[in-house]
Image 1 (cartoon, rainbow, N blue to C red):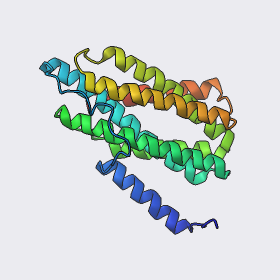
Image 2: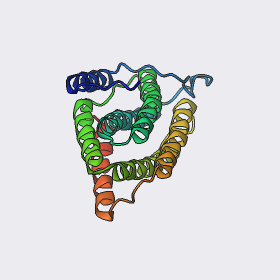
Image 3: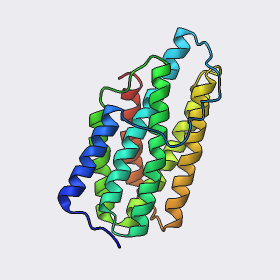
Length: 212
């Protein structure tokens, strides 16, 4: 039997998820890809470089939680909703892994995480209200851009930072799977203007999060 949640229950669930994500309470279901790799000594310049890139990746996972939460909340089809929830659960692993790596690098998350979460939730809600196919299309384009962004990080991370590189590699592989799953559910191609706008927003976010 399907349980129908009341609007107040949905609001409480969304608020609880947001609080957990923004406050840094995330527990991974899968072991971190870096868990079997030894800590390596990085120069101060290398540590700062890795910390900045992993802070950007952590912000990306904060946004992913907000996007999938909103898209699942407003999805019209149960299969689509289930896909958003599954992808969100897997992204929660990424959130926990990047937070752990930031601690290892003696670095903090972005001070703007509440703002990033709120903005991403609004974008996810708008995409979902347009319709499931366009919401899935938003996922496909997001994951396409994230894949390119993570490939760039694999080039930019210090060669000696094997732990960060292992995390980013697994994240990239998971993002590709999420995009493929959205395509199979009938994702619509987004207009070019929307794709360009998404890249512009992403550029502002990553440029800011690297330092703050």
